[in-house]
Image 1 (spheres, rainbow over the protein chains, first blue to last red):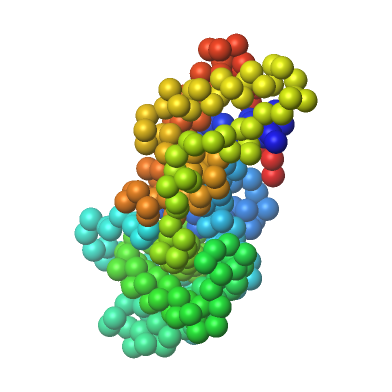
Image 2: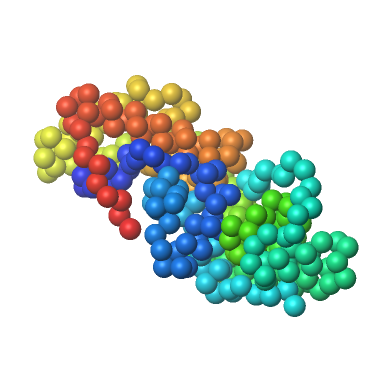
Length: 77
Length: 224
């Protein structure tokens, strides 16, 4: 059974949400800002809002962040 | 869902952009570079490890791949990611490290291929796309406060009356019946972004309907 907060979550549609496509081309930059310990929402506010709401894009973001953290910046040589 | 990035309008013959390591990647991945094959093999190796790691990270979600099938999917992800990276390498502007940019291709391929496998094995049922009997999330109990009960009744009526057929289908499937957005996109012959827009518009409209009926919701911070 939903409590009021769950109903708010169910109907979440926040102003400024940039949608899914906008995050695809900047996901690398977004993640690197996080890796530097900074807040990416200052530069990419629409994607920051979107990632809080869209489970598909959030899973992709978490995967890129984990890959960048775990596998790092390897050299081709 | 295949990941599409815009292709560069024309070849860029300026020096490769980015930090020194990124420049080495871009230069050595050029087909004419003497270290092309080695760079390709090294990138393939790391992308394969990333794809396998990501498939394991998402193992809790359907279709729960394992064994040789998981290895096959990982291989397909790497092959497609590598092909896309090479096709779009002129798009790399050095705004991030080359490796982070390249890793996104592998992750998006994993995401896309898992969704396709899930859809092929368990496409959404008709019941998951239609508002039939009230789902548990919308059911009301006698013990609930009258105002809360009234709010949910208004919401249910608004889902039926105020949404377009596509908005209703998307809202019912994703918000009420937990159909993954990419699986629904495949079922409807659409894409994640378009389905998300339908969902966003449906939520907006339902909020307005609730407010118009005297049950406004106050927007709270999302739960982590």
